[in-house]
Length: 98
Length: 123
Image (tube, rainbow over all chains, first blue to last red; front, side):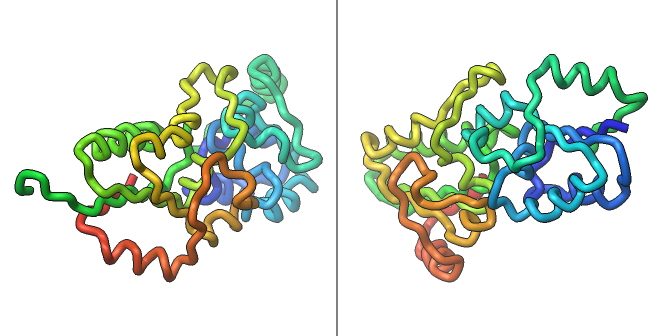
């Protein structure tokens, strides 16, 4: 399953909840959730741990907008909008965490 | 408010810039408040510190990049910008990452400063 998160890890617990129950598949961070994939963020350790079993992506245009593209955590893949569509198409199902 | 009275206004920015409209709306309210010659302080804490991050490029999300406006605030005599140190550190940011000069403040000092205000708006 592709898990889509759009809220900052410091503002909502959607990333926490997602990682708590998810053992495999992929997580795509969009909008304010991209902050979770940046170096020095309080969520960094938790995300790195999850990357042992999940593939993690972040939406590039959202990183650019926030001035955070140059501090993406190693191992997280930045994708553009076409990549977003590909991820949705490649996975059998997806969940947008609200 | 009597004619000519100046109150101390504080805007407490706690949201990241583009995920919601709060940051932009707060900025517009700040400019209006300054136009009425009020004493304005801006606080950036929690995800609000992200509003001041250098290098914002919003072309890809087709949204107005309002971050240059923070640099224009001193032209409106808005020079009291405060950032809570703990919020900044929890997000991997330092003062060098911010696009304007700010006063970095501990959470304890921030609380004291809030106490001195006449009007505090959280956004």
